Image (tube, rainbow, N blue to C red):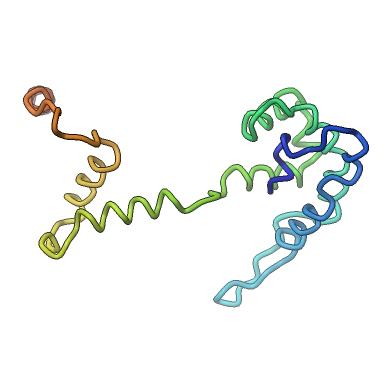
Amino acid sequence: MRILDSNEAPNNRDGLNTYGENEIKTLVEFYGKAKKNESNTICEAILDGNTLIREWRMARNIICNYKNFRFIEAWYHIFNNNINFHNQFPNLTKLIELALIIPLSNGVVERVFSHQNLIKTNLHNKMSIQTLNLHLLLSLNGPKDFSNYDYEKAYTFWNGISRFNQK
């Protein structure tokens, strides 16, 4: 997917003629063919492979004009500056949308499980899901150092919200 990043495009026009050829063919192999899942149900191909290759060969000339932008910003500008991009390059647009929604790392999930294991220990094994969720929210989003935490201010704030909700 990194060929879709404008910063990966070559600086010279000569290198652009072959830029991403192997990578786009690999992506066509994966997304351009029907597959069977665990229950032997056939999942149709997401993209038309041959058309994607043709679209890529035209669109890579557009991509290199956005080298000063990060990945998401570049595609934001490409889509906004080229109103017909979606219609002209439908398969490439789908591929870009996939690249934008597929997480590149499971680090966030790993971090949540790590915090969960610190909170829900053998001593706290009867903790409800709701309580665990609240502890995780504090652990992941709250202050890292509670030594200077103003508990009274938090209580006053919470108490004000509680009274408001009761009315």
